[in-house]
Amino acid sequence: MAAVPEYYNRIYYKENITVSAGEEVEVVTVKFSQAEKITVIIRTTYDTSASVGMNLRGTYFIGTDYVNTDDLFNFTQTVVAGGTRQDTIRTDVPPTGNVTIYLKNNDDVDATVSIWVFVEKKSGGIEDAVFEEPSGIT
Image 1: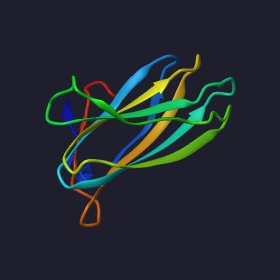
Image 2: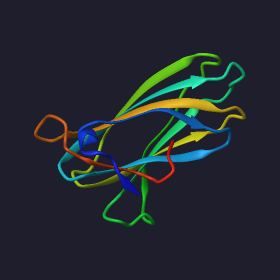
Image 3: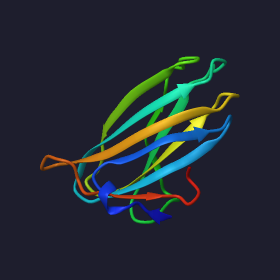
């Protein structure tokens, strides 16, 4: 995984991710140590023939144990054929750990997604979390 540049350490943003029909894409892993909540904003532009909404899933794990993961959230957007839909997911997290965020396109046509992620601290404000992208994310 490649580290995201330092100026992204407060808010992760990736635009125009093409998620092919039937594909699941690992977008980013967020590492944090003072968290209270994680917020993910997803904006999807759908093809005119789209019929199934984009699925956004976050798995939680401690350390580097990718085997023992639990879904922290699992959300499917309402499809807007030929249009754009934006949703915000905000959920509590344990104070320390990691969340990997995935996008899954269950439709038979491609979709384009932009995503924002940030971690709120217990003491208020936004944590300087570490965001790591898998190699090859476009």
